[in-house]
Image (tube, rainbow, N blue to C red):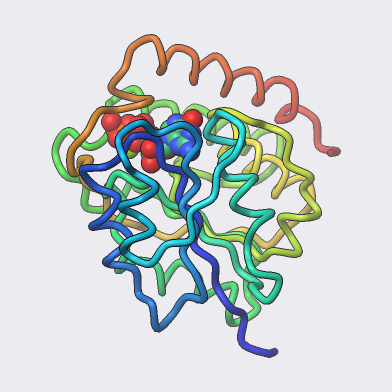
Length: 232
Ligand SMILES: Nc1nc2c(ncn2[C@@H]2O[C@H](COP(=O)(O)OP(=O)(O)OP(=O)(O)O)[C@@H](O)[C@H]2O)c(=O)[nH]1
Ligand SMILES: [Mg+2]
């Protein structure tokens, strides 16, 4: 199998305190490009990312919209898409383990699970850990697949992502990918990844009550609309 090139996609909204460090620590020898999707930052996030070597693009508002725009914009020559957050919580050193099963042809979708990883105190709320297990249990029953998390750090074969026809434009994106991956019978792997608190800046999701309620509603919507039937 020919070696697959990698595009890293980072949705980032007002992450000026972390984005420079995140982009600067990319393993440039392993990846073809790093795309930062900035849809509305008012703090210079895009300019800082570009100065560190990222390709910066914009998209309509929303986490899923940003992930989708990044996926569509990836170099035509990239065969693997990797997603991670722009706040410095994901451990970039885990990237090579994340893409390895796809590169070797053993998997199509690899999810970084933070549940058994080394987690910095306070980096994940109890409710996030619980949600990962709860959703995992339902998907085991309805989809016959084992997931322990809905974490942002993940890699997917590009041709597989195209099959999934993703449509979630907000925080349901991650779960939609997991459910559709099961429905489309992708070869799925979970690997253990470490996780730490955001480097700085403010939370757009878990640390903001209104936003996390919205995200939870969206996730439940995706779960009940898509997750309880076996067919896409
Ligand atoms: N482009 C874009 N990025 C977004 C949007 N909402 C969130 N993000 C980014 O998505 C990532 C996840 O958001 P976070 O605020 O870190 O959410 P979280 O990890 O649940 O919260 P923390 O635990 O506080 O970090 C970060 O890189 C955000 O900048 C959005 O609407 N557009
Ligand atoms: Mg975060």
